[in-house]
Image (cartoon, rainbow, N blue to C red; front, side, top):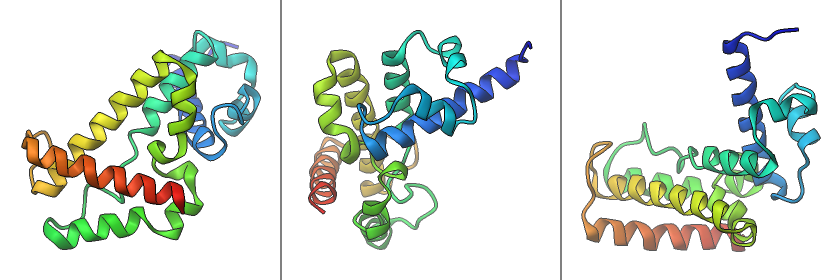
Length: 169
């Protein structure tokens, strides 16, 4: 049976969402194609119509996981109170206990380091986007504004501390 382009796009997004969550929950080697497609409500045979191979799925799912934002980056007030709320949300038991819904850097760093250069590049780009977004929050900048080098440094230091704290928790 032929599937419309719109439905095919929905199926693809469903696969990516499921893979991004399951990889964060179980690691890259702890999840099979059948697990992902079952979670997305599809059969595993259709997956390869959307992705060249499993490596392509992993790369796109990891990139998708970095769409996640810190507790959230939007909708909280600016300044010290907004930053404190984001830090508290990041270091919360809820975040720690639900890695599939949380930070891909904390959940997948070891897997990404072992997976090779293609995934490492995707991971590095995702981390860079989060550093930029967090630097804008720290400096109270509008989305898309360029943070200062000092703001980027502070964001990198804070994110490294937060990720390390979450991993240790």
